[in-house]
Length: 339
Image (cartoon, rainbow, N blue to C red; front, side):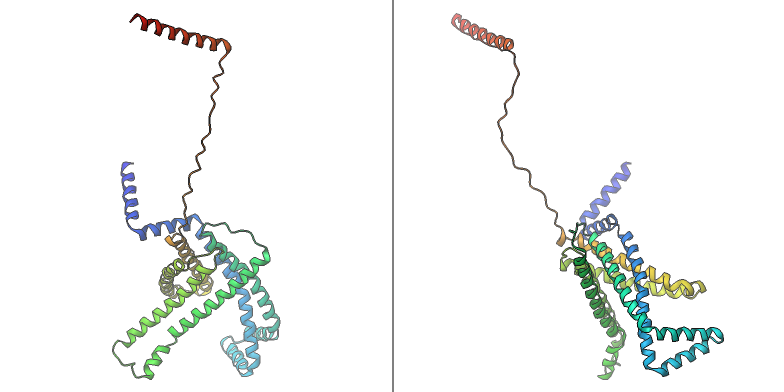
């Protein structure tokens, strides 16, 4: 028992002597105390649920494109017959024709359902982020909350567009084409510089999304400085996770079972880990010194009041006490005269 106490005291001392480690421990405690894993699993469920309306909208858009380009539609149907010969291929083409005919209805239903599921998704995400701040959000009218969630959803969409644009610039080879156009593609070390620039742009894109989510999606005001620091940590962790996940998925999808169920399972695991990273980064921001609003309450004012003590003496006891005092005074006087 003494050994355990000594080890605990040593660990606590080491943690206190390293501010970053102390912050990490406090952030981990906040994440566990505020049920970060539980909320990450719930958001993952709503994420998968929200994908079906998006697929409906995607099919509707594809239907409008195919109607406007008959040659592309004929080529698609020929490819289906080539890859899936027989009656099954003809059934797939019939399904494609039915989907094209009902593209308007599918698109409208997908948009309405997507709006409903999207609002539910963003509401749960904001609730999970707010939970990491250990604050009590005042109740608001439901229509105000929905309008706020709609604004947050649109803002997140714009942040994702900006991130996608930066990622596209990083991965499209635009920098390589620029170097080639000015004749610097053969310079030694140019490929290394391009790789560094691509990684930096990818990190910047991820950081922009995480910073916006941590700073703007919680229902309580958040310090931009702490949100930016936490987003930087989350961006690095996310990029490392993407690299490891890509290697793992290549290994899993090579098996028949992985090819069948790997996509949906991979999506769920990817979403779960991503939201865990996001919630832990929020816990890191919430436990930073910029947001440490712990205040020591002043002591209560001192009130001086007179206090009357009632001895509840009876009449006889009072007379006896008076007599004893008188006898003592008389004895002192007599003794003094004799001296």
